[in-house]
Image (cartoon, rainbow, N blue to C red; front, side, top):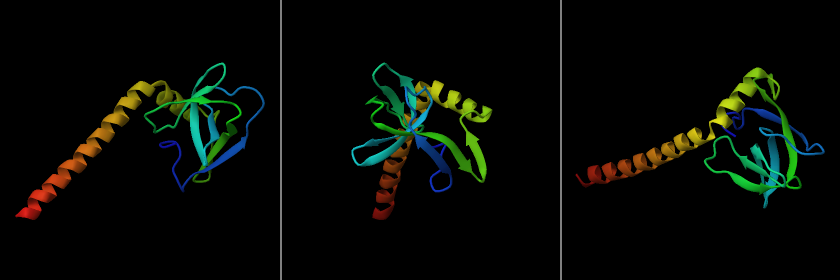
Length: 131
């Protein structure tokens, strides 16, 4: 859930899933196989949800209410509470999620650049080691 959550630095509070349907932009905890996953709801459909992590370039379909264990209610960062009703959090959510196609293109381009950079480094090292 980068850039919102920082691993080993932030504390998140998750409450049991409330009755009824969840809303767009809720951050939910669900289980897939043996793994627990924390992602954001990007679309609410009649039978399921479309979900993605904030730093993912793909969407997950078919997550139902029975799959969801809980909903994030707040983040504690450096002793400060960040809740879903704070202005700054809502601004982040709308900027980050409403621009999903642009964000996806940027993250994919970043991945391509990183892979190309790794290949170039390997080739340069190979050439330098032959000298």
